[in-house]
Length: 206
Ligand SMILES: C[S@@+](CC[C@H](N)C(=O)[O-])C[C@H]1O[C@@H](n2cnc3c(N)ncnc32)[C@H](O)[C@@H]1O
Image (cartoon, rainbow, N blue to C red):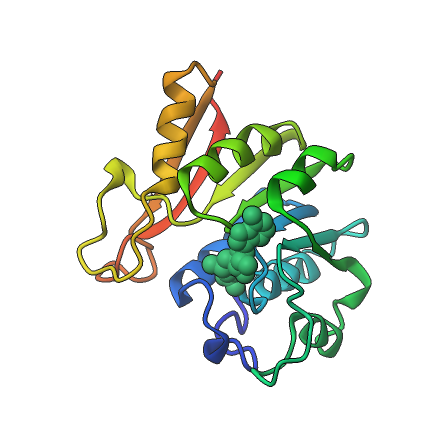
């Protein structure tokens, strides 16, 4: 897992934790995903890891589309923009940034993806609408990766950022008959003393 946490500007840009950066990289690597849709660009930390994993995969037809409701590439003095980082790393050719609301984008999108990473609006009503729309955009064998999934809607032992929305949304969808299962990633094997991850794979269960 080369240089996943040593990328220039990544630690300072916030976003997903160092353990989750590794996990995201591994998921792309192990699933062989070549087409990825991300909801929630923010400062582009997870987008950079997704792009790095695609780059290392050697896939010829690779693409990453990263969506945010804000214009994340507007210069605002808070460091390198996501688009500038992609360009500096040589990834600009297969990465696209879209400014849109997640549900609007998911519902009007006509592309299919191997991996859809949901890390945008963490409130239950939004995630409840995002998941079914994302399921329709998956290639066969494709998976959704959900961030801030708290099993049982409980905060982690040490967790300043507690978002019950994603797990509440999954539970409501399942109660209503959606054929999905959430698989929380749990404690990262490379950091057994660390916090459990709040990443979860959402798969069709049948
Ligand atoms: C937690 S941040 C994403 C962090 C990023 N994935 C990372 O790890 O580097 C959430 C982002 O989702 C965006 N967002 C919130 N609601 C959204 C919506 N309805 N549609 C699209 N993006 C949204 C926010 O603007 C914010 O940039």
